[in-house]
Image 1 (cartoon, rainbow, N blue to C red):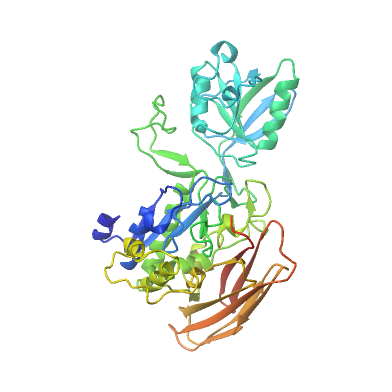
Image 2: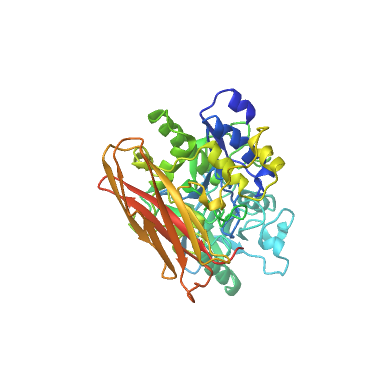
Length: 492
């Protein structure tokens, strides 16, 4: 990272990460701090450890933490069973296929679960040769399961989700004809194999389909908040396209990346927050080109406050993990909107000194703060009373011993002179929210105005499961400057 900074890059895109740790032990956070000081925007993957709670990586506030959502494009594939049912899944298999004759379908009924997961060495060739194998998703790589089936002599695979992945289907360039299906369909196919004396299947492939609704949907694998390093900072920040992304690919390895995959291709389709992060890095470059004077924090604010939380059916974003509505712990401020981010109206700007005051509020020693800031003369004479006082474009409210939390934010006018904004608050029934002032008048471009928000947890109204969500939006005819708010009554 230091080398890239020396080389004079404008944006650092890091599709990597290793769990969460205090910032002075987080090498990516330390490298990113210097980048931010030099005016370099840093975008990082949130991680692929969802849907479990608090599974985020790269949560430092000076980093853009990016989750993953789907596109409105699918690669359908079909599993036709001997009982007349046809199930739709997804696949990128592009070979000759299975022909048109159904073959026997097998699913290991034994208590040895490594064989129904199709782990290496778990399938007996005499049991699967010439057949389609039903494999449970989980533990090993999806494409490896196909290779395991292939090595045991199987001619096809149905990859069925379990509860962990819900209805999320990820398409892969499998070595053999293979169809991935969601949990509900998977359970129906499992039941068919268990109950039918002579189960059969035929797999077929349907190319590319566009205009899929609803989309985007938050990917089940996308890592989730809350942020355990600093619970007062809401993470992830945004989501972007990260499921079934088409991009250039090296011919040095086959599309599955497996050793025995000898196919060569210049393009491949992959999924992960490693795919969504570079989309946001590209948008940061676009914004930096349009606004060369904006700080990394201003660019980040523009992308966050203009993000959308409605899908293409005009419904609240959904979560692939359970099919229910998603929350800011999964999607942050929402899905990035490139066009709107170019003119956000107002931004929440944060200087390097503001971040240092934030670090000084974290009960770190001076040495630990210096490990991140890399300056000799840090005294922490200026420190925030609470990490949540950082001028962040989103809010994370922790009602611990206190029922009242009060934060002050500062907005900078990057729109037109004479802009007037009115606040709109959406809050759960258990919280009272007041914003003062409720109207902001920016006389000139570049003007900075402050407002204070008071959050009060109402007596006897702590919601189960101990968290809730809302928003604070500054509106005028041209712009909606939106901040999500997450509320927690107990720390994880």
